[in-house]
Image (cartoon, rainbow, N blue to C red; front, side):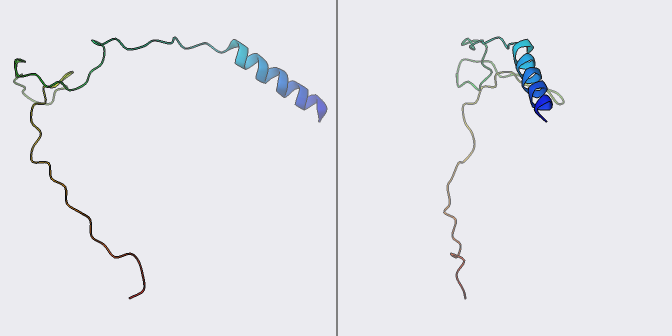
Length: 76
């Protein structure tokens, strides 16, 4: 039992020491692909299914909120 525990500790330590480290990078302002809101931006004409990297979102429908009315789960 002790031999298995020692082997487990050694292999765990070796795997953590030999694991590749990820590069820590911070995004730059041009790297972020978020929707923009600009009135002077061009409007692309698309045919079929396409992915737009930075869509121009100036208006987004009629956004309304309605309260949710439900019973409190008590006995009727």
